[in-house]
Amino acid sequence: MDEREQTNELEELELEVNGTQADQDEHLVEDTPELRRRVDDLLRNNLGFRRAAEKVREFPQSPGVYLMKDTSGVVIYIGKAKNLRSRASSYFHAAAAEEIRTAEWIHEIADIDFMLCASEVDALLTENRLVKDIQPRHNKDLKDDKTFPYLMITTHEDFPRVEVTRTPKDRGAKLYGPFTSAGQLRGALQVMQRVFKFRTCSLDIEEGDPRWEWFRPCLLASIHQCTAPCNRRISKADYKRDIRRLQTFLEGGSEKLLNQMRSEMQEASKGLEFEKAARLRDEIRLLENLGDRGDIDVHAQPEVFYVDPKKGMRALQRVLRMDREPRVIEGVDIAHLGGDDTVASLVQFLDGLPFKPGYRRYKIKDVKGIDDFRSIHEVISRRFRRMSDEQDTFPDLLMIDGGKGQLNAALAAFRDQDIEPPTMISLAKREEEIYRPGESEPIRLGRESFALRLLQYVRDEAHRFAQHYHHILRQKSTFEQTFRPGPKAP
Image 1 (cartoon, rainbow, N blue to C red):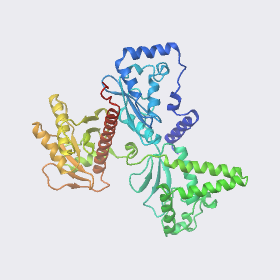
Image 2: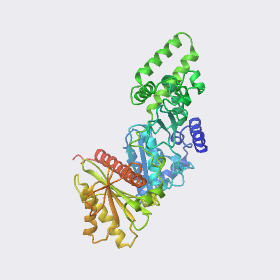
Image 3: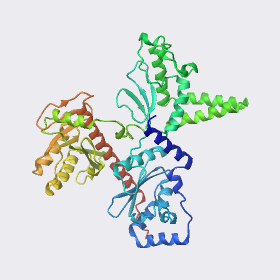
Image 4: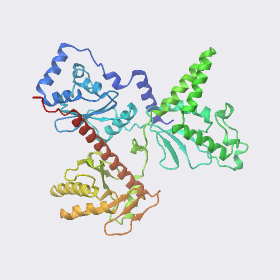
């Protein structure tokens, strides 16, 4: 374990001992007449604060993320909650006016929104992602580079390895997670290893290699927690059968094993084997906690999938025949649900890495229903009309998420605005084809191409950023429709 992972483990241990910040915030300090007076003053004299306080009374009592905003609509704080109404309302109680983490800024609250989440785990991961993306000025803890761990099963080896990692491979491996607790994940891995007997070592083992015939296995083989492919004690086919059983377990087939372990625990308890029963109880809990993980497609952490920015920029210059390396790359994506609440995102990369101050979000105003082409036309027109009027420097490369139609819609926006476009391409997701203006045939790059991987990074960031904004608007729309006051009775 490297120094960074050791630091993360210590942080998680401290949270387990002291409780989560959300738990600690529920009752911060004793309510006193003086504190009540300060909050009453805010409620009387600060219209935005009062409206926000009234708004949270109608929040759902469900897991989710809440977003505090100032008078300009800028998000100043993001938090997670098991119960949105209870947690968000605590900021409008007397204790928040005194507690050191909130006293200096609660008077800035002028509005509050929320995003519903499927579970507490989903809320934790969503909060972490939003804080890293938006960088609210009053969030201190989640702006660092701490990441969540994954369970990784290698797929390119004769005898696949299973390991816990914070730096997963983006190819040649099957990933599960991200998980919210590395400690619980490692404990569950030990339990699974006793059942499925997979290897966790870093040896490069190939079937039929005579070097392994006399190799001495490690202790795990002696205690029957590994089938020792390093000593040719198991065939490649039989070992991969065990790995498939492990994958079935991780992908929803866990109940049979858990029921068996529960029966063993009950039998041990009846037989007065309390130590065995307690061990089985703890193991069952560890395995049950494997469900406390995010969906990698929803909660992917872009910062853990490394893309070499310099090599990507040099490759793009060569592939697109540009005069210089594209130091500034912008990506645009559209998000909607059945044509409702259509939004656009624009992400900016500087020297091959995300530049968060350059991110922009747009609510599509002039398009009704599903029409990605017109939505792209609108956002490109708005973005580059303003940049042209203010004489801002255009990006070196503009990438549109989509195929030839989306690219033509963006070109039409520049033509209609009478603006000379920068170098522009579109990236079609299904076949990862790159379209260029005036060229009928797309560019097809190998999956290992540095240029393609950098474009995929930009595209995925734009997509994720658009989806987050779309979810916020959907929740806001649902909230307003649900709690909008009806006509008064005569």
